[in-house]
Image 1 (spheres, rainbow, N blue to C red):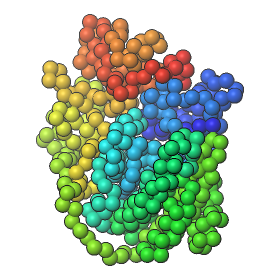
Image 2 (tube, one colour):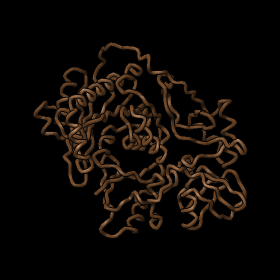
Image 3 (cartoon, rainbow, N blue to C red):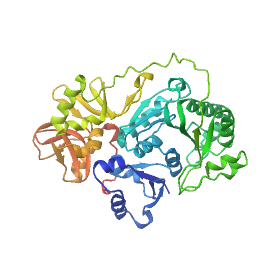
Image 4 (cartoon, helix red, strand yellow):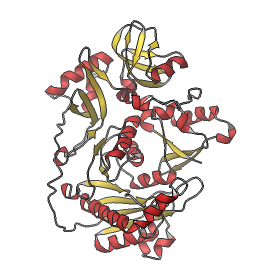
Length: 451
């Protein structure tokens, strides 16, 4: 029975209550698909046999499908909104986005991923869920360690592994291939953990997790690491979860305070452990000449290059200009991005993106909000809002087609259906032109089921 979570950031943006949302969703579902709920570490985890990926709410980022075990590693990290957090191997973004939600879209997350192909999925999920406190980088997680000595409050290390935790979805040939390269994988895992050890502050914490069951990638690796580096195993304060690893206790006593989750019919196997840095340690600091420093210029709301743009957006969409004080901004070739206010040192490495796209410059009319921005700004928009009246209009807009509406001509409209802010558009001669992202248009949505 698949698990999922609700995105509190999107619910908050449109002032929807989580319990009411689930109650309404349950009203649509047959009895055999009723949603079950449990709360772990303050996070509500749901499960149902119903394919929630077919819901409009999933496409709009209110629902995220994720295994319970995967959620637990982010919950164990227990991030706070004023912290700097590093997700060292972050794609496809399941844990990154949950960490961002737990931080209330505040503070700072560096989501690093070595694979450009996997970063596409990471960016898609950051956009879909409206994540504003995350910066994405494409670097070797081992080699960036010297750039951030004793810098982050918390780090998640979820490295590549043999993935034996859920053999239902891992092809047999891939499992055989993974096992054949276990020595190489354990070397990478250990090096990534050591890199994290260099980057976390004294008193800071690392959560190491894998979706596999081998001792070599889990308990044996941690034993080797603890023996050499000044870290102690910490028992997470999660009352609903027992961190009692009897297998680990036989290797070293304090490994009892890790968790080994066996694969079940409705969840994948996982290993999770929390480590606290108790002291500094010396290591050879080699300059990474090949890692370019950032060429990204970060602006505050009152910067000369930014203030006029924000003023135009505020006028076009009826947004209070004081609202922009809580964000940082980046300009890139006709696009402006915005992210949560933070004090991260962006000069240290080259980044791919920070926050999400706020608006794009239309050379004829001006700055138009992106649909992703509309969905997270929602209640702050007070002007030029089109409320679609029928599901037919909803479907037409969602799929990027022209929609007949009763509305005056405008280059800057936001589109709403019921409680949901869908995205951006413009109106000409009573025809709504859709700017809903192509990447999020899908024929898989069942529009008959709308909460």
